[in-house]
Structures are given as C-alpha cells and as structure tokens.
Image (tube, rainbow, N blue to C red):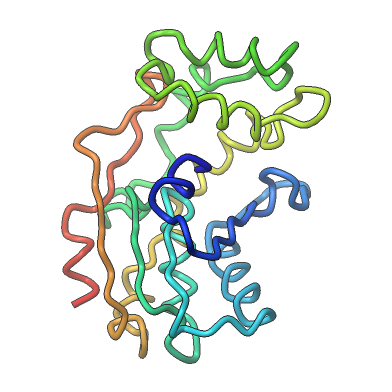
Length: 217
C-alpha cells in the first residue's frame, strides 16, 4: 500500500500492521481463528493508547473484518471513522454453508512458497488470471513485502488457504457482534465493494455482503 499511502495519505501518520502469520509478525501453528485478528487490533490500539479523535481505520479484506470486530467489541468508541475496502464480511448464508465445499477447490490452491527472486515472483503474478491488471509499482511492492530475505513467502500458501477457509467459518460471522455493539454505530463507516471477486480466476471467493453498510446505521 506504499503508493496509496504516498499519494492519498500524505501528511498523515500511517501505522500499517502485519497481522499474526503475515509479514514480519509472529507465526505460530494453525489454526488462526478470524476473531483473533480483531482482538489483536484492539489490543494494539489500547496498548499505544491511540485517541479516537485522530484515528481513522482503513482495511481491506481480512483487515476490514478485523477493524469492524475491534470496533464492535471495544468498551468505548475506537475510531473517528472507518474505510472498509472489500472487507471480508459476507452474507449470513455463506457462514451457514461454511467451508464444506473447499475440498473440491483445494487442488487449485497456490502451493509455491519459494521464489528465486522478487523478479521471479513478479513474472509469475503477471500471468493472466493472477494479478496482471495491477499497476506495475504496486505489484512490485506486493511481491517485495510478500517474501523474506531468502525469497520465501512470509505467509505460506498453506496458511493463506487455511485463512480462506476460516473466513467462512461460523465464528467469522460478526453480524450479531455488530448488532450488540454499544459504540460502533457512532462511527462513520464507508464501505467500498468491488463488482467482482476472484482468486486465481478459478476459486470462488465470497463477495462482501451487499447490505453490510445498513448494519452500521
């Protein structure tokens, strides 16, 4: 997100979190229940005593889910406002179905954890059906931050597939948590939804619930 930060958030103090299991943050054995990420965000904000008067949360996918969960379970208003970019919060029927159908797509899941270089990863991701439509500088940032000094994925393919499965588990359904929250409804929240969601062009990824914004009114 370097380009977005530099172009859109110039002059702001930006804190970009690596979730557990991602980037340079702690890795531990599976599982990684979705609620943990929101709890981590809440604990991070509380430990640094960040003021809601100056705190704007921006999150994509898992990041959007984590911000909403953190704001919903907090004992006070946590953010000045939230911007959710295709947050990983799906329609209720998705959670009712759960990950029963994942097995039949497992053979399509990415498996390569090791690259020979950042350029090698970029070349692969530029192929049709991957990330070929991404701006070149953003794709380079994505690949650069995705690997360690030995060009091994920071978030392994196994862990990424696991998180995909956890995202549709019943404990990832936070609509009741939102409804019961005392403070999230005081936060201005903007939801941005893409028209289509794909993973490698083949594996169906649930789209953000079309009525999500209504839950924050």
